[in-house]
Amino acid sequence: MTPLTHCSALILAAGKGTRIKSPLPKVMQPLLEEPMLYYVIQALKNAGISDIAAVIGHGGDVVQEWLAKNESDVVPVWQKEQLGTGHAVMCARDWLKERKKVLVVNGDMPMLTESEIKALLDHAGDAGIAFMTCDLDDAGSYGRVIRSNASVSIVEAKDATAEQLAIHEINVGIYLFDVDVLFRGLAELRQDNSQNEYYIVDLISWGCSQGITVKPVKLSADNLDGVNSPMELERLSIKMRDRILTRWLNAGVKCFDRNSVWISPRTTFHGEAWLYPNVQFWGSCDIGEGCVINSGSVLRDTVLKDGVQCLGYVVTDHVTAEKDVKMGPFCFLRDGTYLSEGSFAGKFVEIKNSKIGQRTKVPHLSYIGDAEIGEDTNIGAATVTCNYDGVHKNRTHIGARCFVGSDTMFVAPVTVGSDSTVAAGSVITKNVPEGALAVARGRQVVKDGWSLRRKSQK
Ligand code: UD1
Ligand code: CA
Image (cartoon, rainbow, N blue to C red; front, side, top):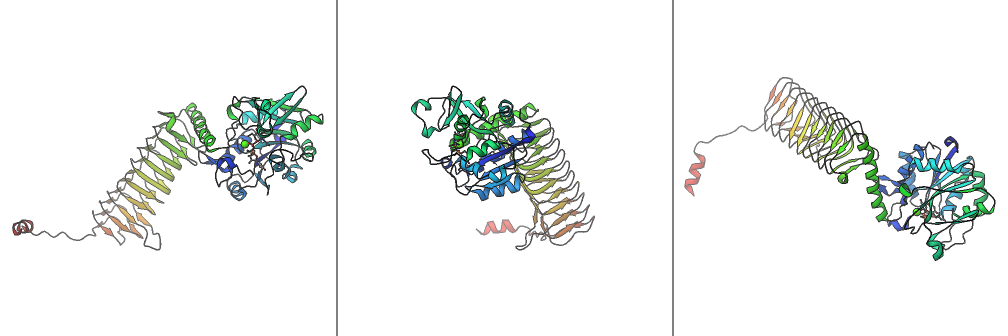
């Protein structure tokens, strides 16, 4: 077995992926919102390989930017012109020359896991070249593995005879090389094929012709799907969803309908949670024990501590909710909203960039933006923080144990002291001292008999 710490990995990620029909490069096509490349990198890292480079080219700026932001330890290597998978490896010569063993991996295999990588390394022994194969009923456009006596080769579907096309064993697109063997082989690659490309797969027959030990390692096809078309991308999205959900169900998460629950790969659960049909977790969510997420809820980059309840149709984006918070039904919480323990954001409530104090309630029809509200305060229905004056965003501060009557406008910047009361229908433009009552509305005028007199005139 090759000690993993001595193995580096080169991901081939420069191809256009014409068949995927997208301006985005193929490896950036998302599965559950993460690019395919993300999954390949995770599989390598989970297998213990941390020395990784990626060959980028088509749409390379996008890939490079994504790597810098998300996987900054992966070294980008440019292939300016895409002359084939063999050429992609040639472009990494400078990076390779300081390495001994390299795993070359097609970047379009998002289902790959550490177990296939470890199996290849285990079975390779000290072969100069090893590569992964599997059997497929429908081998489609994959390269076919031709085994004859002591030698083995790969023939691309486009270059294959009818007899070769009938072979079920295919080239997966993952290879392990001794780097010195690889350098010798790269020097011999030619473009004499139907696509006029340098094929990495030609190194297999070349190795055999040189008396180098070449080992095909056949594995189960389960996690070895490549993605070449929108149909395959959709199929793998569902396969990935099922894989992630299965992992969390095994960890104690409960759901009623696995076909409508979507959990992103960067979401974590800490114990049991109850997921109703039609709920989604995107980006990096962190869900505490005993949370209940009712139907229609879509959570993104959200932290829920233990016992939080999303009562249905809760949409969150960059939100933290402490223990026993309740949300919804029908609320939209975003942009750094922080809900302290036991607080409540209820029906038709939008909260943005605000801190809601412990046990404070915002039960109905309110907009709270750029605000800080203390503990045990009650915000009446239809309260609005008027945070935007057309030029600047201004903050509203409301203290602890306040009672805010319904239909109140807080024209920010404004501060309301603790233990104060604001009368319903007020437009609060001036600060309210602690313990005070603020009434800021037109006085009611009553004219006796006025209505009856008007009716009699008709
Ligand atoms: C390749 C293999 C085929 C194998 C299949 C498995 C070759 C010649 N063929 O075919 O035997 O069955 O993968 O999926 O290798 N890339 C570059 N630079 C290039 C061309 C491609 O970086 O110039 C990258 C692509 O981004 C992709 C990977 O290499 O991630 C494979 O390229 P792709 O065009 O998908 O190869 P296949 O035709 O699928
Ligand atoms: Ca492919």
